[in-house]
Image (cartoon, rainbow, N blue to C red; front, side):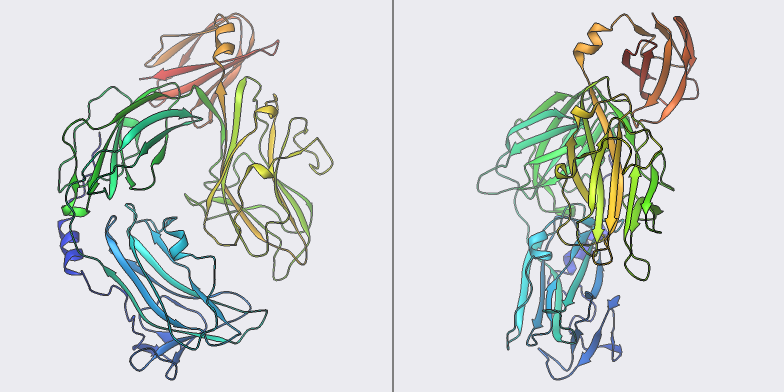
Length: 546
């Protein structure tokens, strides 16, 4: 296993010496570059220096409400995953024309938002009028993958009124000291189960006098043995299966984790609870740590569009309006499809983003998923559809029968630029030989949102019964192969070889008999060989290349 051990002695010492020290720069709001710019704050929208409504010292920050949300923001580096931090600030809302709330995030080293502690850091309620200063304070444990914290508060208009003020003072973000002993017990009911293109792990949290902070889960898909972790040496996440081993850390209280896996492969897992973080980490390794195993589904990825640099194989169709679906440098990883009807003003539009034709008829189960973000206006007019009789080029609003599957997915209730998974829809009933999926955007002069879509994924589960019935129609040998594979079929038809991401590498007509395919320039891994006969029968086989 590629073990990326964290030897963060200096980081640990830094965090240890910072116990009780405020990590917020100019948290007391006493330093100002000018009357509207508090020193050390990266974003200060509609902020002004205040000398009357002050919680402590000489100054506070006044935040004026406007037609849109305004932010006060500072990013804090040096966060240690698993470390506890106390988050605190004071606010005064004595104006009926303004409301405030915290809207903060833990972030990883690549500035990706983490969803942890949503209720505390991004509450669904706002402040209320009060003549006294209010105190926000929580002690939270940083997610294991956290490297930064975005400390942000927002001001909002109230009842359509703007120009009101809320006041902030004495921000602090402080590490909490202390070291716990080794966990008393292991978790129970540790299990692994195949689910789509993943394996789902589950367990019941450990109990006892000393509870864990988190768990280290090690996985293997090559039959390799596991090396127990060592106290004082954290094992970082390594989700790359290429060497046959992975590691992942999961916080106490979650009791589940989902792993992406290769098709039709045996997997083994072991779980270790631990306390503390950095050089203080203390694993429980005595006795018999729980283990679990599962065999992944025999699946094939039909389409996986990441929108790396353009719209890829998906096509934009504008039914009306001047605005259209376009590529944008957002998403995770960067690159997505974006649509908005706003261009200096709101405009009426209907625009479709349509997948290529997908052959799904050989699968017993088919699933569709994607990530997205929505900001401004509402979710009205945003929908997901599927068709098995669209012609691939005409006006989708008048051509083909489109089934609305929007209810299978989750949409953000409040607009933001944060991408999140929309869920996974079971679309098995739409397994036609030419199936199309589409994102339809509709805007009006009154309701004009921005919709960003990323990582649409279509995959199918290969039915065991179908394979057995067609066992003699397609043969691969040798398998595993090294530099070439012989493919034998009993009919004439179309041969397609794809990687597990659904990218077509080879596609050609094949005559009845045997064909040798050169794979010398292909990387080792798993490939899918699909043969569709002239009579319409489709057979899919897995090819392993070493």
